[in-house]
Image (cartoon, rainbow over all chains, first blue to last red; front, top):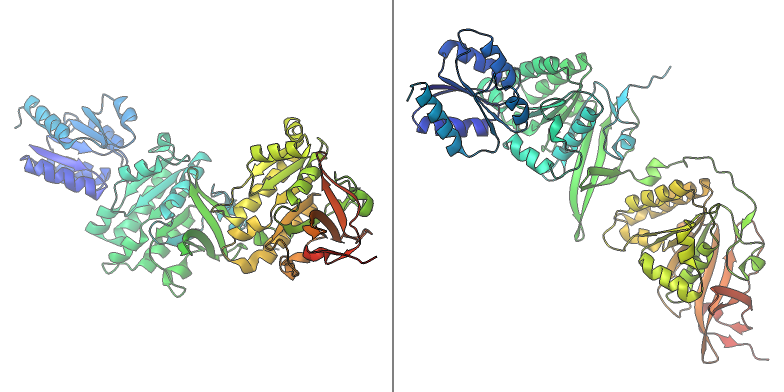
Length: 122
Length: 480
């Protein structure tokens, strides 16, 4: 399973990438939403995990851009957010799951695995 | 023609005063200090105040700390409003952009992000980290220059927070409009926080060090009052009519009482009746002539008990809101903070009778004692201009002594009236004596007066008997 991670904070991005790679996924990361959208367009991943507050393009804007693109709108999106969990939850049309920081990595990994099974992607 | 630049409030109490009315819109500032000095709190406090004023703020970090942890520590401060995150205030980390693409890419990202967010303020936290990467493409000086010029172009103010000890000759220093230094140092056994506007282009800043503290509300700055009130805030209009003292017998020997809007120093050793003098003075307060007790020693309840024992209904004065008691325990105090507390309390109630017990409480809090003369000059000028008749005490060390250690001559000359009280041993008895040494512009009886404290407050009922050595406390009756 191919995953794009969008996260501006390198400590969180690093940890997320390492944990997902250890779990056997192919991971590509971007420091903000705009780079992430470019990655998503070129890689067409199976899942996007994004932060909310990021420079140039927020997680919300990234999700909106993906849903507006017929080629990308089927890709599930998980939002991990420090303070905007509420805003994200009110947009169930954009996000498949919302995690509030700090979150337990195991819970996130389980959720990723569940999504993978649903989509038939190990 | 001189122009004033448009400014905005930093939202930090006292800091606008230091910078001559706030930060200049579209200007750039470096805020520097060691770790723990409060730079990040200062940056966030200004950010939230700006957001609360309806503007957009971009908080950019190069920190080795997650924003989550930052929010966690900020959540203990009252200015932090989680609801503003992501709407009025956006926190972004550019660390990855810096490490992957260099400072030039960070400049580019900031320009796009400022425009996208329509930001009025950028706080850039971690300029030191930018320096670590400076060998890559841009040096820090060029980085600062580029960020500030592109921000100024859209009227956006920039604060660069840095741990780096930037020296006078530092190139970044010459680029920005203002430099604010935060210091956190040990003086004796206590920590003293002081800040300094090292550079303030386009505005007259209050130079020198000003103490600040970090509390639940964030940072509060207390500009040195001799700088903030180098002239009083109001015009001094002295009223020549004396104010009755509230002490039986005193007005008769001083031409009607204490001159209105004057400062009296009441000196004497412990137990001579200084506090009782003050309680009498305050018990003459009324709604028209409100009184304030600003003391370092007794708690309000103990003072009320003491007044009651003297036969004074101070509790009634307090209940009728004629007198207020402010207690400032003689512990670790900030001298200017106390002065503002006092002046604020005076102006809030239009206080006319003020008793300070004692001026030594301010002296104890002085980290730099040589400034006390200027400190008391500013404080007393301001009190006079507010029309306050103030009595302050000064403790003499020795119960009985030929030398009288009054405050230094410079301080004594700032005072209008001087009264000495002490206990005197005569004929195997202890008696209290009060001597008027100076009253501004009023004739007075200079002879020592005997003081009675007998259930009706403190009273003077005539001259002390003829004796020598009264002022030393060891008197000898004159031979008949």
